Image (cartoon, rainbow over all chains, first blue to last red; front, side, top):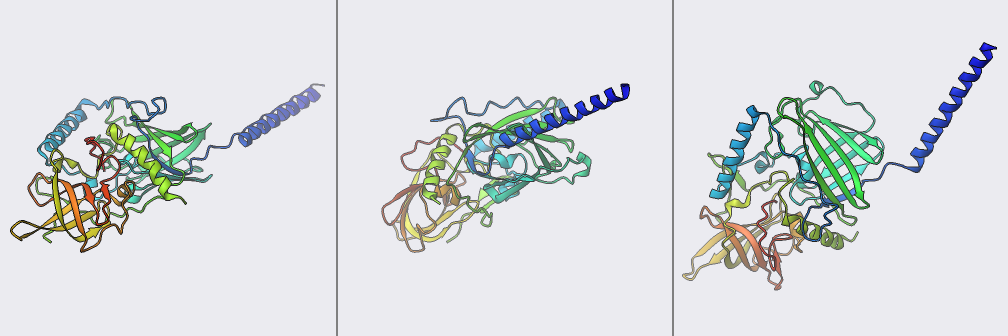
Length: 253
Length: 144
């Protein structure tokens, strides 16, 4: 008798599990991941922009005091140099790639997203930078990823949101001159906020350098007919003088 | 593929972006503070080279002064991608063409500057990317 009840109980559990998994399957079939594939141009607040679709403001940069001093000094030096008309060089002045996350918002250049089930690839038009987001692999420990410009990114879908986890960004690869340690982790949440408008909420976590995470959001507008343009930096006529100032090389004739 | 329409769409987007650009941008390839954007210099000359390259395109021109002396100027432009959004094509200028350019001069006094607008041999007037150039107010945008 008890044995039969046990069997019945087990069967009902199995049946329930089947129903739940089929429901999950049905849900997955009716709600496939949104398709972000295509070219996207920056969309920012301003003339003609819908304020509801514009990205929210960034959070304050909360560096720990020991890092804030150098950061503030550098920003001040940069502002002073600009007002003198002698801009200070940054890696990009020499065509060194921007890396993650800066490549996601270089001036007014578009990005292109290529989405497949196993990998999302993002190509920035400016300097032709490429990042690959693995959708079918776990993240590695930070210490196991060789530091680079794009680090190692893995992605997963949370409903309609593509969540990207990136580690392994070189310390010289900075966003707006913010210092970071080798423990930095970048979490991005990419989703459509309107049919042709994408937001990428970028959160930088760094327990060594930051008092609390820094979050900013980028907005992109779909460019259905846009053909991405090649960008190879083979004629860089800006050079850096002995004082670290960027100057334009003029020709004699 | 209708790239002209695409360019128009992105042009509008970019112009909107230029207005309040700055907050969430990566730093620019270089600041434009090396140019004196409060000044405009107009030059008429002969093109010696038109370089359709990255990170910037350039017009090289020889300008003959009143006394007959020739002075050479290098004129920096946006990138080809940026320029296409304001109507430029890679064949719009060639060596030997007569061109009139308005530029913001280098602050260090060297004979170079940042293009404001160019009048081509066929009479077209083109700017230096969306939000820059003819009929556009100066936005002070400094990202390219």
